[in-house]
Amino acid sequence: MNYRSNLEKVLSQGKFTVTAEIGPPKGSDPEKIRKKAEVLRGYADSFNITDNQTAVVRMSSIAGCTILLNMDMEPLMQITCRDRNRIALQSDVLGAAAIGIKNILCLTGDHQSFGNHPSAKGVYDIDSIQLIQILKNMRDNGIFQSGDEIISGRPEIFIGAAANPFADPYELRVDRLEKKVRAGADFIQTQSVFNVDKFNEWMDEVRSRGLDNKIHILAGITPLKSLKITERMKFHVPGVDIPEDIYKRMKTAVDPKKEGYGIALELINEIKQIKGVHGIHITALFWEESIPSLVKDSALLPRS
Ligand SMILES: Cc1cc2nc3c(=O)[nH]c(=O)nc-3n(C[C@H](O)[C@H](O)[C@H](O)COP(=O)(O)OP(=O)(O)OC[C@H]3O[C@@H](n4cnc5c(N)ncnc54)[C@H](O)[C@@H]3O)c2cc1C
Image (cartoon, rainbow, N blue to C red):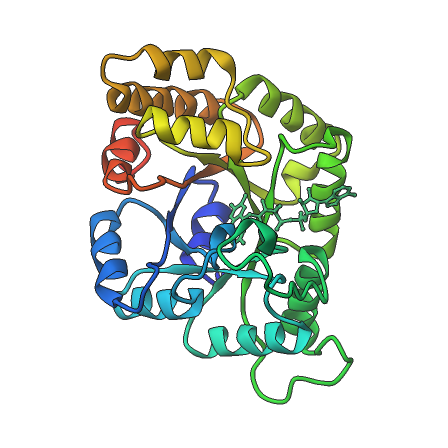
């Protein structure tokens, strides 16, 4: 079997998979990415490079991915529809494939009004679902969105998308996932999971529609480094659901860092048992150094 990427390979082989996020710097220094990547080497199957997350300007995802490729590490390029129209998106997909990027996560993107250029024009020519469709057509049928043929080299990309099991309106959550599956996504990375009961409800519905057999689902994990980060996520990040018991544990902990690490380990162990979940996606906000021990302590990597 020919796999497009290492990520596709480990997921297809049924191994419980780990991806980890590397946020590019607010500057052009490549060392910032190299340093984070070196800490994570060997502790994830593929590494997400974000695309101006929270709508704050950072080094481009494609540049971050190139730095990883030069380090022989597999990147997963994130791409949002917020800042590019369909011409630029398709062009970036071709460029990414040309330099050896094999995984792309298709996102609509955080709204620009929440970022550091709130008066910026949002493009939103298409949304994440249309982008998935376009990418699949480019890859499988060799055609652009216009219907024109791709002349030399289809982009051989493993196609991903995001899902938020916790955002309102709740009734539309699985519908949105189903649309992404139908559009042609191969894998899903979810928003960070803290409320396992609610995540289980979402997964019940995912399984009842048979979606877990059509797509690989990686559950989001964020180790909470401090009470400040916990409160920022609980009260200021839309679509994040930190239940009261976890908040209380972080609030009363003598050592919040140790508590946050312990909570992340517990969440990974619970999530590992959920049928239909094929891996985890770790977004360690300002705490990338916790990832190696987290995956070792939860016996995920290195694989025996
Ligand atoms: C793993 C992961 C990585 C991310 N990386 C980035 C990044 O690099 N850069 C960045 O800018 N953002 C990033 N985000 C944030 C993400 O773009 C937002 O959380 C977004 O709101 C949801 O993901 P999406 O882009 O796939 O949106 P979509 O699923 O395409 O939805 C777009 C928005 O419209 C809302 N919506 C859709 N349909 C309906 C409906 N019928 N009724 C009401 N509301 C609806 C959704 O709730 C959502 O807010 C990431 C999120 C995740 C989970």
